[in-house]
Image (cartoon, rainbow, N blue to C red):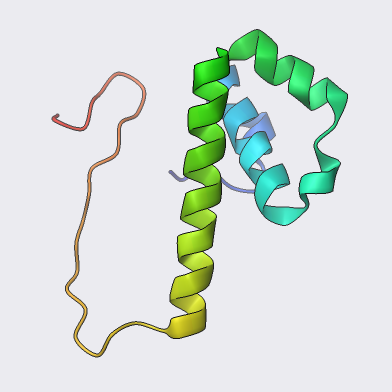
Length: 93
């Protein structure tokens, strides 16, 4: 996670991860910046189903974050940690 920062493009992350982060940045910050070049790079690196999954995950997570900020947390929200998959590991590791 520490590599996902403003300098992720120069990090040691795999190229697919960097591309997914770039795509997330575009979708969250200014979707009009989604260029034909970025679309072509996405199509070369991901299947159509993977692009749909990326798009859905990014936009739903962004929407939930915006709603949480707008409404604020409930008075006694429980803390929940959920493992996420990463290079060489799954959510069950």
